[in-house]
Amino acid sequence: MAHDDTIDQLNQLVHINKDGESGFLTAAENIKNSELETLFRGYSQQHAKFASELQQEIKRLGGDFADSGTLGGAIHRGWLDVKSALSGHSAAAILKSCESGEESAMVSYDRAADDNPTGQTNALLEKHRRQIKEFHTRLCRLISETKDGVDFQKNE
Image (cartoon, rainbow, N blue to C red; front, side):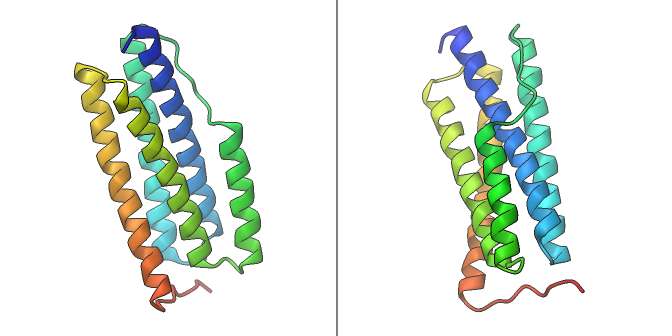
């Protein structure tokens, strides 16, 4: 991958992770279950860490890094707010929105990996991809539980 292309790809991932950070924070604010709220806040913090690590890598490579999310991410968060309110803060609806966000993040990381980054950059991307895949798998498992009749108790 050419140097400028690498920096562009990494900046795209910064945007994706900033969106993930804000998205999970929005989910935490909308969910009415303390266990899921804690989970979402943790995922938000992890995406913030990913963005910071990517920014450090861009700086190491001599590039200028992004420091915000995307318009699409802001629209997704707005939709999450509306969907949450309309569903009575349904855990299933919020989990599904989070899962689709993580699926998009995985696609973005796969796209970056397809450009064959090298060395330290590749190791960083692989570490993030593994963790995002774990997040996605856990969200899918929780969604499956809601389909099987598990009802996440709402906080009072």
